[in-house]
Image 1 (cartoon, rainbow, N blue to C red):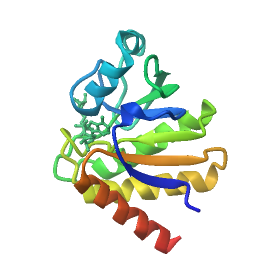
Image 2: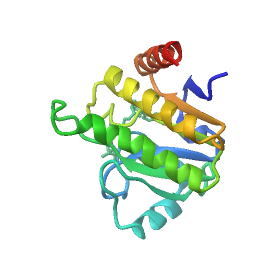
Image 3: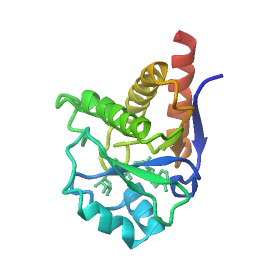
Length: 173
Ligand code: AR6
């Protein structure tokens, strides 16, 4: 059985050890999934984020989940799509690896991701999905303590892209 799953849903409603936030480098909130996570977690999340002094693209920082059903939030700024020649692929893979490393270090067994960079940051979703699934799959192969990683997709086109990427990964594995 695969430890990677794709679901359609709202990441702020998921009762898992950690959810990932597709943040920006300020870590002080924004629109999209970032805005939804801050609204659902309450002002204590922003207060903790202020103590972190931002984050570089491709890296990640962890906070508590406050009023969310998830125990932790792992914040990662994804790359802004600039045509694909500005290390976007490498930086996106680094987001997934950085988040999973922090999750593992903090004892998280269940981790949910949104589709990082494919909203406001305009990364093409089919390309992002392949990178996400390959990076998560490779990480899980070396980290048995993480039991399940889900991609929580907010719309059907995103879900279809991740379903296809997972099928491709499983056919090769
Ligand atoms: N649950 C799951 N996925 C969601 C949710 C939700 N509640 N809400 C939106 N999505 P985006 P980015 C999906 O734009 O491209 C922010 O302002 C959304 O449909 O949230 O990494 C930050 O502060 C899309 O598929 O993130 C940054 O400035 C995916 O989440 C910037 O946007 C990512 O879309 C980051 O842009």
